[in-house]
Amino acid sequence: VTLGEKQLPLLTSLGILCFAGDARVRGQTGVLSERRGSYPFIDFRLLNNTTLSGEIGTKKKVKRLLSFQRYFHASRLLRGIVPQASLYLLDEDYLGQARHMLSKVGMWDFDIFLFDRLTNGNSLVTLLCHLFNVHGLIHHFQLDMVTLHRFLVMVQEDYHSQNPYHNAVHAADVTQAMHCYLREPKLANFLTPSDIMLGLLAAAAHDVDHPGVNQPFLIKTKHHLASLYQNVSVLENHHWRSTIGMLRESRLLAHLPKEVTQDIEQQLGSLILATDINRQNEFLIRLKSHLDNQDLRLEDAQDRHFMLQIALKCADICNPCRLWDLSKQWSERVCEEFYRQGDLEQKFELEISPLCNQQKDTIPSIQIGFMTYIVEPLFERWAQFTGDTPLSENMLNHLRRNKAKWRSLLHKQHSSSRSNDHSGQVTGSQEQTLNEEETP
Image (cartoon, rainbow, N blue to C red; front, side, top):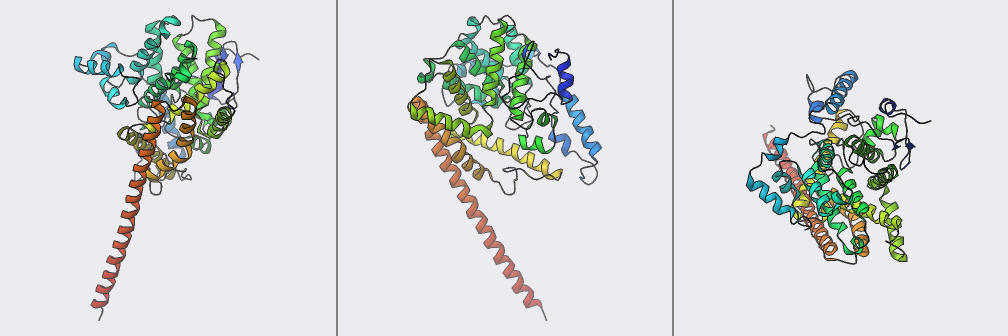
């Protein structure tokens, strides 16, 4: 049965349509898209604003809060529209510095936090417009600049600025890293304009509308998206479908043949779904097999697409491979987001998720584990693929130095903890002696 576009939002909101993982669902317009703003925006400030003695309140009150947040997210002003004045409020010094930074956008020491400040919080839009121009995508695909800008504003606006980590600045950072990877000679020599556009779009939108909580949280709170996607790649599916919705709403690719746009939508989904951390081993095993057998043929579109998936996965978790000052900021941000989820789970008497307990899970221990089991295996294989280029060697050197710094900080934490424990025991002994002396 083919469903009309007007029926989809209603059925989606009711949780009637269910897609499993990387499933390809086709109708008259190809991939089914999600209604933008369908995600119940979780504003921790609202949830923490409880009355009386800090009690949670009734389930009815919580439901009302979430309903208000859903309404607030769906009805945000300026959706898809940026007041032109905001783009020109920066003085010439700031604009000059931003332009200078863009001239070095291919450098690995690119400071996305500084760039975001220089662009007045428009780092994602500014970066993508520049990269689309640099790579010749606007001319090749005959894109309308106003429409491209409108689409990129939609994407940027649909990231939650309240999230410490999963926000538009993270998306811009991943996009800049993706740009660096697309320039690696081993890959760049084979990439088509379509490959480049897909890589940049997927990087920009890979976490769009992220709520600041992870998949297990959505599953155990019985969120409608968890039901919709049958607990498989829940967030990644939502990011993909939301991106498709924005592409169609903006009509960025409306001038292209239908089969071309459908293929772009499918491949965007395949790229974004690859960022699911639960699929890490699946991709690592496949990459290791290709490298060991030396059977990657980048002339083949399928092999190129696989390496784009790997490149996006690297870009998504490249923070530990950045300069220490940048890497440390990202580490603190992602852990802050973890801790917020843990506080929320504790408040609602849910089991606290791994890495989300601020009392037990320290930033150094989280980062060391992340680097050891997730980042190092992937980037060592990536370096094997690229052939130990200056960029790959630079990233691995940063990774090793950063890991050593976190180990040093963890050691200091343990030493400080033991010292405090010892100090506490001495104080207790002194108090006991004093009490005994005072006893008649």
